[in-house]
Amino acid sequence: MSDERIHRTRHCVDIDAPPGVVYGLIADAVRWPLFFPPNVHVERLEFDGRNERLRMWATAGAEVRSWISERIQDPQQRRITFRQTRPHAPVQTMDGTWAVEERPGNTSRLTLLHAFTVAADRHDDVLWVERACDTNSGAELANLQHLAERWTRLDELVLSFEDSVRVNGPAELVYDFLYRAGDWPGLLPHVSRLDLSETTPGVQVMSMDTVTGDGSTHTTESVRVCFPHAGRIVYKQTATPALMEAHAGEWSVVPDATGVTVLSQHSVVLREEAIERILGPGADLKSARRHIREALGRNSTATLQRAAQHAESAIHRL
Image (cartoon, rainbow, N blue to C red; front, side):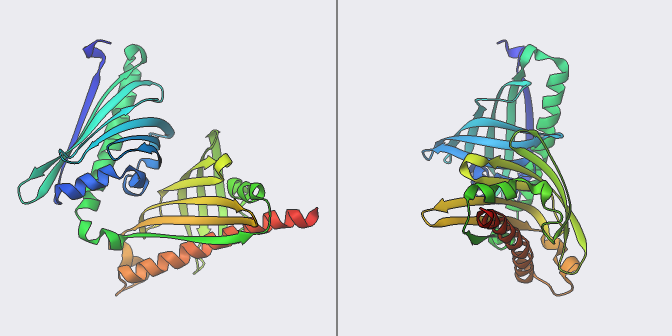
């Protein structure tokens, strides 16, 4: 393939954070859905400490796309090279590099390079990929800068937890309830509206109105990736309530010899500047963490309990 058909993009950002911190955020790709707006889910398929294979889902314009990426991590040089092994059409090849340079004052410059080709070098397809690279790279670098520059408080801003319910019923019916989220209005008291589409099998896009504890309603938008054979549904909120910068999670159904455990896992990045506006004067990160834990835990536990009832009632009807 001739060089003139290889298209290149370059995006840079200066970050007021140590280069080791910036590199660490890039290296931990499994957490990208929490840190990078376009990323929906990342599954690490292989990793030996240097070479890794990742299955990635991300938004590209109005679409959700998935691909396999191979990466080589070089922590000494603070560089990560990547190559998509199964790119999504119209992309034919996609390679790139993350590079972190140390700058004066223990700050960093992060550069993201892409090199790609498209089938037949079609002009419209080239423009589409360039726009997607510009949009996603800009969002990723801006959010990474925002997070890295708060690295001393990142552990306080990130909250992860899970809830679980024991089920005396078939795992398949538990999963069925979680999968058919379009049926939730009328079944779950905190869900007043839910619109769901699944144009790509196993990838659901949904918009939901949730009733909060004070009776008000907030709207969220999410992308869900479903793994029916593994009993898992992972999701990323692409539009979050005001108190959260990011929210990703997973529903999982785990059978064992005596029954089934169904779990809801949440990971959240708090929007610190919104805390007092949402929770009132004097509210701090501690109270925001408690508020999110209680609110999300209450709703997810209600969903888990209803999924359990769905499965157990089927057993009683037999």
